Length: 126
Length: 126
DNA sequence: TAAGGTACTGTCATGAAGGTAAGTACCTCA
DNA sequence: TGAGGTACTTACCTTCATGACAGTACCTTA
Image (cartoon, each protein chain N blue to C red):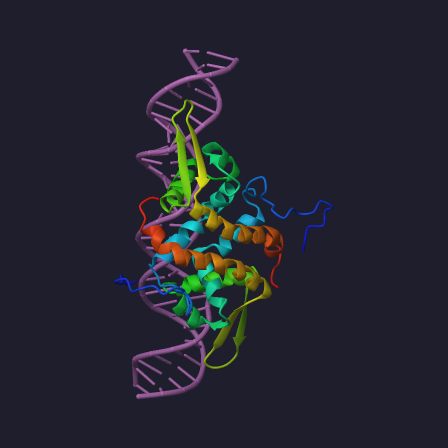
């Protein structure tokens, strides 16, 4: 794997194939298609939610992964964090505009998968 | 196709949150959102392609991962494998109907990511 | 006094994902 | 004669993602 000096990216980098290794698209794609990233973005598409709510909804996520994934999504500008300095602490997470654009594209995909998942896993071949 | 209980599947199965851990949706979602899974599905959306073509287009993929990912996608019924018993061997991979449904949902997502990736990675915060 | 809830952070360990590289079998081209 | 192309499989090894768990700080309730 070579470290290439960045060449310019066409509007549709995968028009002739897939975008190159190491380009920003790969990075972002990895973030948004990560196991917990998808789940959290979908969960947040239903509105702002608190840490503990997200933890419950993204069933099976550990606190560490929740923190880590939220941080990544926040760094990418998909979610915003609103910490209220109250006791007990209250932190709300919500989608940014960019996050909503994304989840608008993610939701149909997740819905489709949810709808077809049973058929898919239970079928040896088709 | 659909589960035949009288209660029909809601349009959005995760209306009240995310689907539970360990359910088929999680499994399938992991397959289709896997690093190489996405790339291969997108690549194949442009038409049937041979092993060596896919290997070149999914830049950076190892032969092992290519074989493994294609097998998973084939087992899930997203791609079909057509091996012609010729010398030298020729094997074409293509999307099934199900695979095309999927990639139709995947493409806008990937396109969106490709379009915004630079802005996203280059922004410390927003 | 202690347990529990909120929202985290950090450390450690392991298991799985993924990379490297070699092997297979056959043919073609130089 | 041997290098190279096609389409893989297998073994080995490393690294990274993830999970388990403890700690922090503050308040409330029992």
